[in-house]
Image 1 (tube, one colour):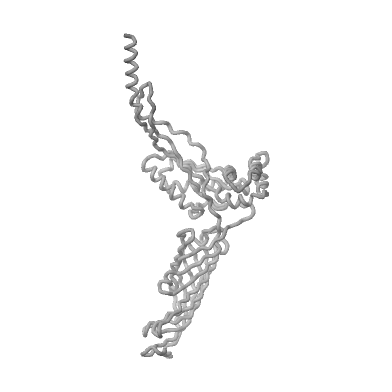
Image 2 (image 1 turned 135 degrees about the horizontal axis):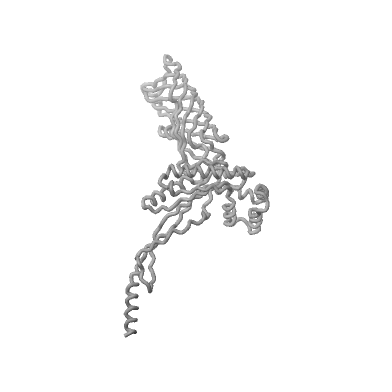
Length: 412
């Protein structure tokens, strides 16, 4: 009887444990990391720099999705500066970059304000060490030599920087890795659900669904990513699509000068006629000095944003439309231009501009014979006209020409 009672008790416990064979909904945490890059010695967020616009769009898409499903746990932002230049200046720069990212996140994603942690972390030595470890072009001996310099904490930080700047590999590191370690790294921590099949248990469970506590967020880990080349724009080729639409072929060349200025030259050269009946002939040459409100430094997105220009141009023309318009002459014009340029793709921009100015033109009227065999000069219609108002309207397609950027020294 005792054995039979023990058997029944064992069978009852096994039946109670059967529900544990079902799938369980386990809540765990996961992370997605993003990197926002900053220009040399700058804390202003530039969405056109090193693919920042694509990164911000991807992060916004994920945050909107997580917020809708109430799965966002926290956001951690660590801002740093590249390890060259004065140490205290770099510390302050990382704080300003952290403040920039906090302001952007609170403005663009106000719902995450209470879950946002922003840390200025000074100089990015760990990131530099990480990229050196991944680099396949550096020899083991070079890596070891660089590690010895970077890991030597027995000397002042400025001495370490000086030794690193004198190493033969420094220029390579500065060109390839320093632009991408001037950044803010954003770690989005969120909840996700894993469905796991529980093994049979000998003891009963109190609930079919067990919620595991979220683990502590680990420090941000650097992830190898595609590096962007630091190219600089040397000049841009353009054509005004509005002129092209009426067969007025044209070409422009613009050369950036310094951080804010550029010089543009243009040529408009439609030159065709049909049997003394129709004619569109014009040769216009012009030049324009432009001031770009955005400071563009030496990077590839020069000639972007708003600009104000001062132009001058002159032309010869011959316009005929049967008997309606039959004039030849010359004109000159000068005035101001306001415009805006945007980036379409890496290899294509678009520019919009409007010019206002003074135009003075001489003219001579003529008319064709009845059979269009000759053109007769009308000496009674000769003179000069003056005009003040809109003189040019442009919607220009721009092809920027770039070369790889190289810079010596150890500036921030």
